[in-house]
Amino acid sequence: MSDETTETIHEAKRPPGIPVESVESVVQDQLAPPQMPQPPEPAPMLPVAQVSYPGMIDPNNPLNNQFATTPDDRTMGMLVHLLALLTGFLGTLILWLIKKDQSRFVDHHGKEAINFQLTILIYVFGLMALGIVAGLVTLGLGLFLIFPLMFVISIGAFILEIMACLAANRGEWHRYPMTIRFIK
Image (cartoon, rainbow, N blue to C red; front, side):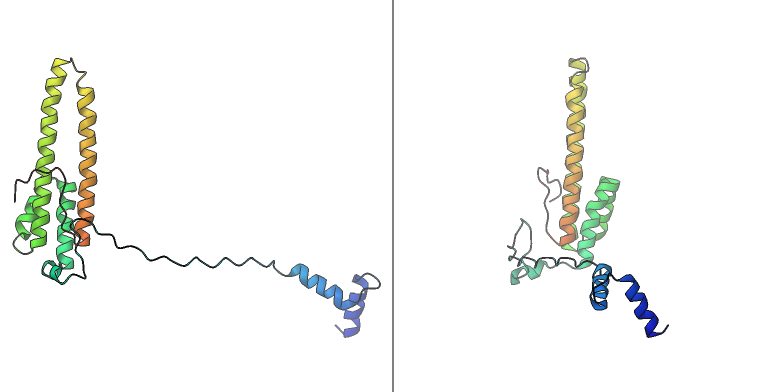
C-alpha cells in the first residue's frame, strides 16, 4: 500500500478536526495492557530466638561433641520408634538387639521405645481387666467409660511415638513421659 492510501484510510476513520497523531495515540492507549500495581516491599525479618528443648544438643557447646550423632545413628534411632508404630514391641526389640552395641544413641532410643511399648501394654491390659470387672458389676455400663479411655491412650501413644521419631531424626536424646523404665 502506498502512503497516500494509508493517509486516506486514517482520514476516513478519524473525526474531522482531530489530527492523525492524536487518533493513533488514543488507539495505542486502548490496546495497551493495564498497568498492574507493584507489590509492597516485604517487612524486614526479626531475628528468631533460639529455643531449646529438654534433651536438645547445643552445637556451640564443645562438651556436646562427645555425644555427636551420625546420620546413620539418627536414622536408626528414628527407625526404632517407627517400627514401634508398625510392628509394636517385636520390631523394636529386634532392631535394638542388633544395633545396641554399635551406637549409644540407638541404644538409648531402643530402650526408650521398648520401655514405652511395655508400659502401654500394661496400661491397656490393666484397663481391659478393669473393663471386665466394671462390665460385670455395672451390667455393661462401665464399658462405656473404659473403651473411650483405651481409645484416648492409643491415640496418645501414637502421638508420643511420632514425636519421639522426629526427635530421634533431629539427633535429640528423647525420653517418653509416664514410662516405666524396665530396661535401664
